[in-house]
Length: 229
Image (cartoon, rainbow, N blue to C red; front, side, top):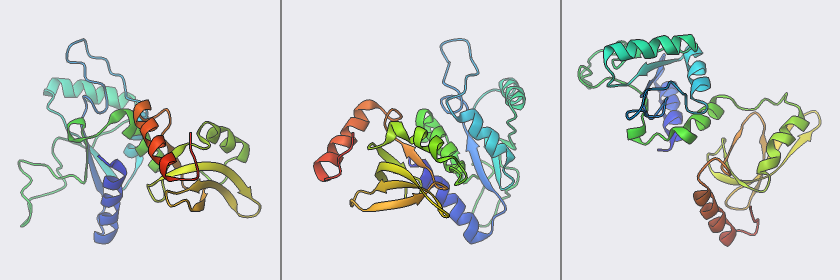
């Protein structure tokens, strides 16, 4: 699943059609929490799941719903837990905002714009971080030294530009007086870009599986003069 493509598509349709809300439905097991069918359940969030859900709760243009086959008494426990963690769900399995229309019958299949569900391809170990970074671009008011320290482990590695959602080489972060702070990126056509730090990047090294990252590096270095590590 290309989660950024799914979210971007939803926001594009919202702008085009003047929708009031984006509806995001979210599974629990294997999506918010690791599955625990063979052991006592532990309410342990995947990394960045809690922070992302707290953020989505506060958005006035987004409504979130639980998408779960859990029993009602289990759902009640989950909701109490989420409430203690400042996470509020607007719906449980049913989007009550949307009624049947001439082109959609929603009695048996609820309406949503984005579905976060491991069985539908959502990968919680990495996708929560991607969503979190999507909604939390770095500020141009950030200190250049702080940004350099943050970028240091990823200099000369492959990252995903959150502007074009393409794989690039991260070269540096620089400050242009009276202008902005910029990431220096080289794209797959070996063109150098100055990308404002208002737009973040997503690191790949140490985030995706080592063997997958190593294969990306191998292919990149075979096809580019600008080598990566």
